[in-house]
Image 1 (spheres, helix red, strand yellow):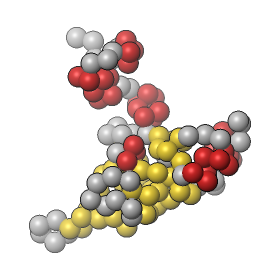
Image 2 (tube, one colour; image 1 turned 90 degrees about the vertical axis):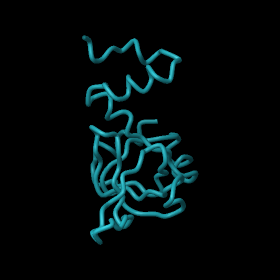
Image 3 (cartoon, helix red, strand yellow; image 1 turned 120 degrees about the horizontal axis):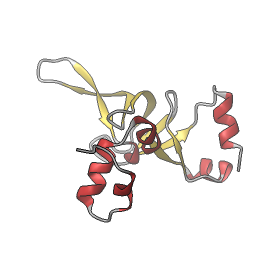
Image 4 (cartoon, one colour; image 1 turned 45 degrees about the vertical axis):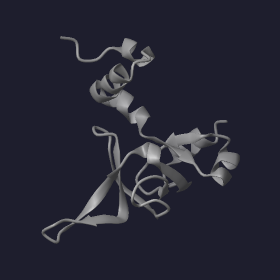
Length: 125
């Protein structure tokens, strides 16, 4: 059985859209780890969203941690999930664990511009 097909992308059925996202190879999942920019960054770079990187400052827009801010600690491309430092959950046994966030529920407030290639991508337009 074929695991991934580009034809799923154009389907209107939510079931097939979820299947596309779940079975997508890593080079396509990387493109799914984008987040919206804040209004001032949107004006500055004339872009709506940009790929998340470690070190970006983000604001959480949805869920139990709404309106909290933190830096991106790590990104799981495989799970299309983001860990934000400073936002933890205390487990039943008392240990703390970082919370997974969907990139669509985050907004970038400050970009990490250590990488020169990333600066070039942002200044292209």
